[in-house]
Structure formats: structure tokens, C-alpha cells
Image 1: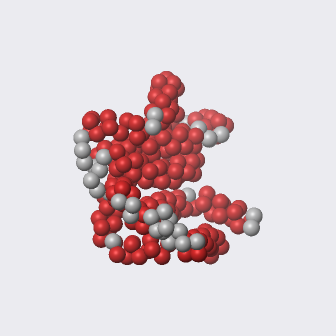
Image 2 (image 1 turned 90 degrees about the horizontal axis):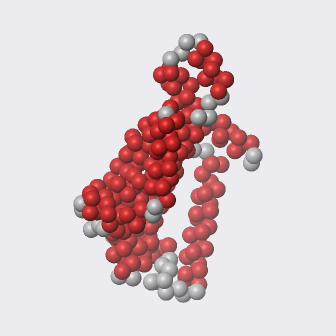
Image 3 (image 1 turned 90 degrees about the vertical axis):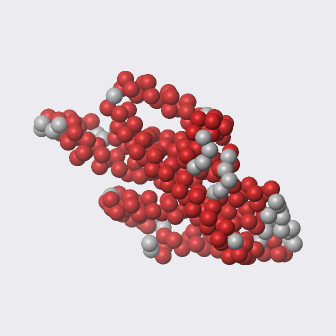
Length: 258
């Protein structure tokens, strides 16, 4: 990654941390209200084993929820594109399901799926899969009709049209949906842990808040932000690897506006 790409966010974060530290120290803000960044880093160093244990559980839930959103969302989008009847039947259900707050059905998921990790994975999946479906459908439908007619007039089967035209054309949209989904999977896992859990960063965050251990709560939040950022960067890297023509065009366009 080039300096001009990562330097603006790095500088912004550094300035924010310095201003935050100065505010807390200068105005003597009470620790339980807003701890200083230095105090949060000290807790991260002191409680790293405790936090690492809960981080591993949450990452496991996030990755499984994200994986399920891919293996369910993309095939479902393909079905919607190729079957108008199923589209009319499925789309309203998708919108209705997405409109229901997942925390509201969390207790039901625990009744249906039992205790343990699976209900959290299920919540992460339910929150993450919608953008995968929507963006994949948009990508598969973004092909110019003339191109499809030309391919079919030359004797291309529907399968070859899908592999050679629709899917490559849809990849930028699919990855856009995946980048949204992977961050939503983080939210979903934490929502699931808020509902019922005895391990995970959501559980650690609730316990720290209940004990007014604000530094530990902020440390948990910082780790969650880091997880979401790392996963987003990984998906973006895979996008650049698989469709460099799209990624490079985006970078060059952005650089040209600087």
C-alpha cells in the first residue's frame, strides 16, 4: 500500500489520539467516564491473555457468519436473477427479514438453536447476508443487454454466458457487498453475544461496563474496530488480486483527483 493511501487515515488517527489524551489530562476527566488512550493501551498490555481468549471466540463467530452469508447469499442472488417467479416470492421475504431488528429475535434464536456459539453465528449471518444478495443481484444484472444477445446469437449456452460475461461483470459489485458484509458480521457477532454469552468480546464488554471498568470496555471496542478493519482490508486485498483491472482503475482515478 502506498504512502499516499494510508498516510491520511494514519495522521487522522494520530491527531485524534493526541487530542483525546490532551483533553482527558488537561480537563482531568474522570477515568470511569472517559479513560485516556494511554490508560487503554496499558489495559491492553496487562489483560492481553483475557482479551485474546475472548477475541478468539468472537473472530470464530464472525468468520462463520461471514462464510455463511457468502455460501447462502451468492447462490440466492443467482436464483433471483434467473427466476422472476422466485424473485417475486423471495424478495419481499428478504426485505421483511432485514427490517426486523435482530436483537428482537435473538431470544427466539436461542430457543431454536440452543446455547453455545451457533446462535451468535446465526445472528452474524442474518445481519451480513443481505448486502451480499443485493449487490450480487445488481452486479449480475448490470451487463449490457446487447452483450447478452450477442453471446446468445453466437451459440453460447446460458452457463457460458454466466461464467464468461455475467460473473466477471458482477465481481466488483460482489466484492462491494462482501466488504459491507464482513463489517456487519462483526456487528452481528457482538449483538448475539449481548443477548446471551459467557465468552467473547461482547461478553467482556458487558462485564467491563457493569463493573465501570471503562478502560477494559474501551480496550474491547478497540479490538473490535481492529478486527473489522483487518477483515475489510483482507477482502479488499482479495478483490485487488482477483480483479486488478477494477482495483487499479479505482486507485488511479482517486490519485488523479488529489
